[in-house]
Every structure is written in structure tokens, then in C-alpha cells.
Image (cartoon, rainbow, N blue to C red; front, side, top):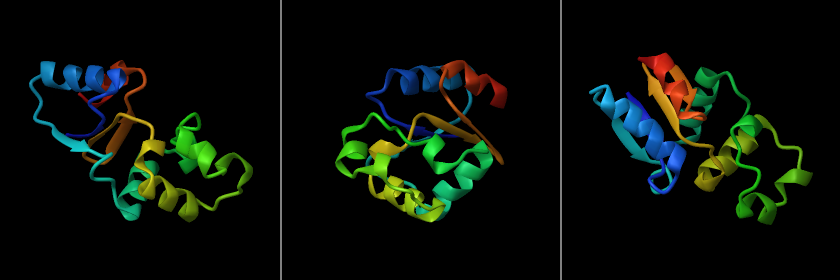
Length: 113
């Protein structure tokens, strides 16, 4: 199991705790310091069955600074911007095999157990 984790985020910490409480080995990826590649984020979005804008944190300052609300981005452009500005990526994302969930609420992770 892998989690794209932000230790400063309560939902991310709660999701990680649920995984650890089950005794599941988990790879913790500090995605803010080691963002996913564009190909990896594209693959994760497909596993989540989401579009980039569905996973984008629209209330982040960088979203406003980049004027993203006014832009019509292609999928490729949105993924590139999210990888270059990982604060824009909603968290936590948990991956198990070929399945992924967004840990909001944290209990969503139970679908992967």
C-alpha cells in the first residue's frame, strides 16, 4: 500500500493511522517534497476515476496566484501544473494494487482493506 501523505494534514494523519492500525505495510510518500511524475499522477487519476480539476485544491493560494480559475486547461496542462505545484494535489491518496482512493473522509481507506 502507498499513501501520498502530508504530515501537517489531519485527514492525511487520520488515514495513515487507520492503515497502520490494521498492521498493513505502507509506503509513505511525502508528495510535497517528492511530487509524483506527470505519468504517475495521470495513472493515479485514472485509478481514482477523476479528472485533474476534481483532485485540485482550488482554495490554495497557488491556485489563485496562477489564475487557474480563469484558465481552460487541458488534462496534460493541469497534471503538469499539479506536479510542479504539489500543494494543489488533494490528499491523502492511497493506492493498493490497481485501486486508489481519496482519504476524504479517512474511512474511505477501508475500501482497500
